[in-house]
Image (cartoon, rainbow, N blue to C red; front, side, top):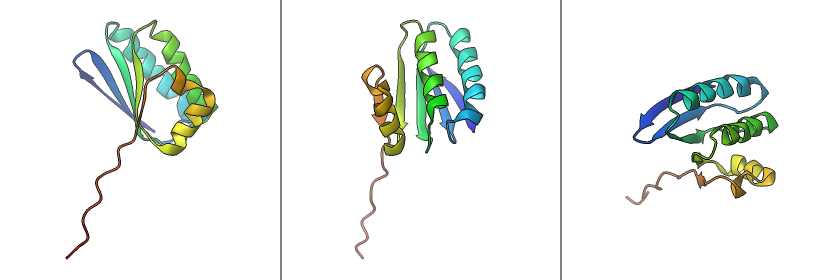
Amino acid sequence: MTIVHTIQGSRILVAVNGDLDLTSAAPLRDALDELIDRYREKSLVLDLADVDFIDSSGLGVILGRFRRMSGRPLSLVGVRPAVKAVLELAGITSILPVADAVRPPVKDQRA
């Protein structure tokens, strides 16, 4: 898993690449906690466009960061259908804004 963050105005954008599971949960949690503590006035946006799989450990990281944000906005963007299904089952989509992955436009194949 790779984690890349950028600061964009009033938000921290964190792009996650790889599965969000037991193996990757602790490093992601630690990285997010450091950013949340460093940028106390900013919202957090998790870009999950490159996440194909999430398990209960990953859900725990997201929910734990939601609590840690203490009322500051947290949102998920670029969520693929398989990951969104897990988020829906866990009820996360009812408490956090979740934006679907955007598919690239289909090229016209006519000659």
